[in-house]
Amino acid sequence: MKTIHTMRPQQTGLTLIEILVAMVISLILMAGVLQIFQSNKQSFRVQESLSLIQENGRTAMRILAEELRMAAFWGCRSQDISIITDNLNPGGADFENLLSNGGIAGINGAGIAPDRITITGARSNRLTLLNAAMGGVGNDIPVTNGSGIQPGDIMLITNCAKGDIFQVTNATSLGPVDPIEHTASGSPGNLTDSLNFSYGGSNTKAMIFQVRRVTYSINADLDSGESSLIRTEGGVNETLVEGIQDMQITYGQLISGAGDMRYVPAGTAGLNMDEVRSVRITLTAFSLASNVAVGGDGRLRRTFSNTISIRNRNQ
Image (tube, rainbow, N blue to C red):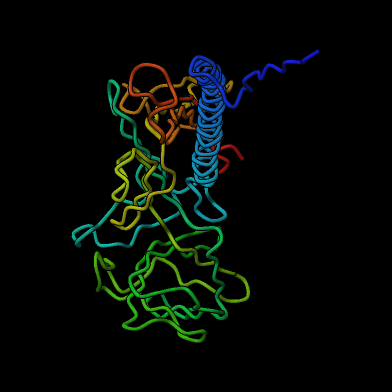
């Protein structure tokens, strides 16, 4: 009997339909993976922006708080500036009345515009001691160490009973043994060659501080163009913190002997800056990235508020 073998064709590949089905399934899976990736990426951007907002807001508030706590510092008699005489020439170029408002001044931006605040006082970390008596109101001031003091610097000399604000008029930088000159020269210069008291000596120890006036405002950074917290000192602007959009300030004025306070913006009728004991600041920080929020300009924002006591007026 003859046996007949039948040859069956073997499958050597995928059919077109099978390939198309596999591609569709792969695309669906890939779309899911991409969706998860995009979601995680957006979540990361949002969290990163929130962290940056938090950091910028806290940094800006810390800087302002540190400055305001030391506002109106005039040596050992900060609460009684009546004992301090301003010897600067009021008719000189760039003259500023450093004792006006006792060391605090503000400008209300009005409406939605940011406010500004100006702080004046002595630098507590720039202390220099006299090593001998002056010997006369018009004599040079003998100091223990003149390091860091430069011609043109505005200084405060005080012995806790009296005080004088004057400008250093040395022609060159001061060395460790150079006395401080205070002649009627410079810009704005001193009104006279003489101070109102001859400081120094064993019974009247005296200290010298550098006086500074700084203004804090919200303006565009010159490099990035982003709204930032700006410090202005001596006509020079310095960007401190980027991503700060707004600053609103109210001033806590002492209105009774019982310690009653009212918080009002600068320029409010009846506000006396000499009676301000604390400052309330509200900052608005925003994300530098513009694709992290839905709607508007795509930026996230957060508000920070703090009430800061002016130590030198609450002693």
